[in-house]
Length: 176
Image (cartoon, rainbow, N blue to C red):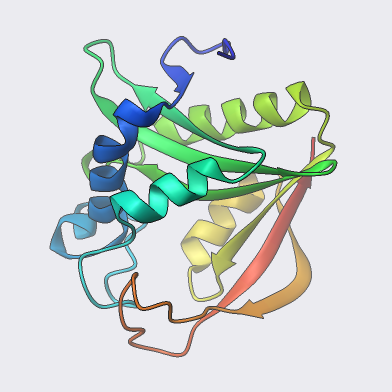
C-alpha cells in the first residue's frame, strides 16, 4: 500500500466501496449535493452517480486505484479515482463530502493524486470536466491544470442520470 505524505490518504480496498459509492452519489447528485459547491444537480437529474457494480468494475481496470481521505476517526470524507495510461494518469470520480467542501480536503486529495502519479512514472494528469462548470474549471486552473482545447461528448449511460441540458466535457491537463 502506498504511503502518502498526508496520513489521512490511503489506497481504497474492497471494504471501502460502499462508503465511496455513498460519497460519490451525495456529492454529485440530488438535494444532498446542493450543500456543496460542486453539485451537478442542476445539470443531471437523479440521485445516482455510480453504484457498487460500476465502482467495482472501475477498480478492477488495470492501473486503476481509488485514493481515499478519511478523518482521524476513519470516516470517509473524500476520494479520487486514478487510472494509469502509459505515462499519463486519468483523474476521475473526484469527490469531497458536500458539507466539507471549501475546507482544503480537495486540495490535499489533488496533491496526493499528483504524488501518486509521479510514484508510478507518469508525467501528466488529465481529467474531463463538464464545460458548464466554470467555478470548478477555475479551481483546477488555480491548481495548475490547463484546458487542452479538446472537448468530448458527455454520454448518457443509463446509470448516472438524465441530462437536463446538453453537456460536454473539457479535457484539462497538468504536467507533474
